[in-house]
Length: 505
Ligand SMILES: Nc1ncnc2c1ncn2[C@@H]1O[C@H](COP(=O)(O)OP(=O)(O)OP(=O)(O)O)[C@@H](O)[C@H]1O
Ligand SMILES: [Mg+2]
Image (cartoon, rainbow, N blue to C red; front, side):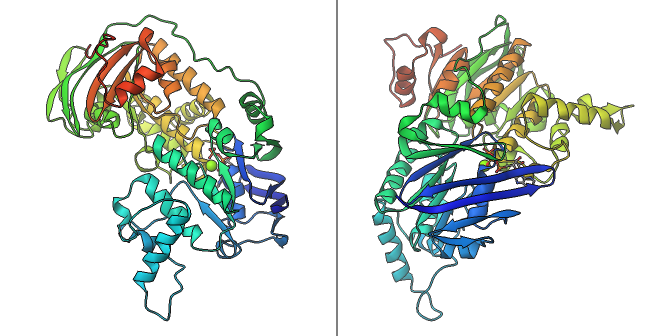
């Protein structure tokens, strides 16, 4: 098979960071080619040099035999390269078809032929076996469908290579399955795919070959059918990882939080107790009300009925500041919108939640040395890849931004931590570190409410698991009842009474 893309000696330098270090490898025409590597390894940077979003300091990109040293976004599009970034570039107030043709509509004269546009959009959808009303506003689409609109944008042009940077991170399970079908049909039509993901299982399902990057360098390319998860991880992290979860070291203590018939924000009658030193997991399908439940507890949204008890005292949570002052912290699911202040430094983000508590000198000024030390402590703990704590968060890689959000909340020393999808976008090695950290926190007497869509993670870390379905609580499982199938059954709304699943306490 001939190569469609050859990357030769590409180097990209940022202040204090060698993001790409003389990277060379090739992509074959018609293959699905995975790229993996730890957070900050240089995957997204490499993609951006191919799409012309940034220009490298040196190197050549050869596409279909033609050499390019300075690709621009325009040129890259023209020669047939399409990209799906993790943050979509759609205009919510426009229709599906208008978004598909945004910026590249070539109709007759100056008027837009909406009929033709809609038809072309429908045709493109047919090519990959999906059906969305082209006149529907993007505003009302699910994340999965928004992504399809992005894919369509490439398809209505003569696209030859589509690059996807962590496409499944925001998707539900069924949306992921649909995307995989689309990828396979694109492949059948001879379109080449570059696929980046931290979910290694996906690579085995989809790719023909996988390239591993580490610290800005090209490490190796392997035939997927001839490698194993273990081998990939070893190339990625440079060592072997154990796949076991850290075990509990201290006993579970007294009750710290209890909710009784908690309702509002789309959930009703939630009942559970959280104990000192406990990790209480929450499982369920997307939209089952896990995040919504946490928003009630954290004071983002006011409950309509029910009670919340903190250390046996009934409380009313007025707002999130109130929650923090009562010792509850939340690591939100959506780091871009609610998590980090992207245009501020790592240090600033790290201190903002604990200035008054930990970082004041004489009660009035910020102790800058303490601030730097604290920030360095967390950069080290979470292995944030950065030249210094003065780096702007926006300049960090996706996974490292996520770590900053986690650090920011951890630094508040809240007694109760709510983790909502803490490891999304985080590489396998860093996940292990995060698990160790969570385990350590509870060993030191903190308590954790953990939401995760990764079944292995909830089962591996939790002491008990609450399962929700459409805003209702289906049951609370004790650790000896943990079972993937049982959880999925409950999560899909099927009552399992004969197993004696408890639903309170
Ligand atoms: N605009 C920028 N300014 C400074 N440094 C940057 C900038 N963009 C990226 N970097 C650095 O370049 C390195 C590679 O980042 P990149 O985003 O390519 O990583 P990645 O492999 O995509 O990681 P992730 O899995 O976390 O998304 C990181 O150390 C990152 O901090
Ligand atoms: Mg990235």
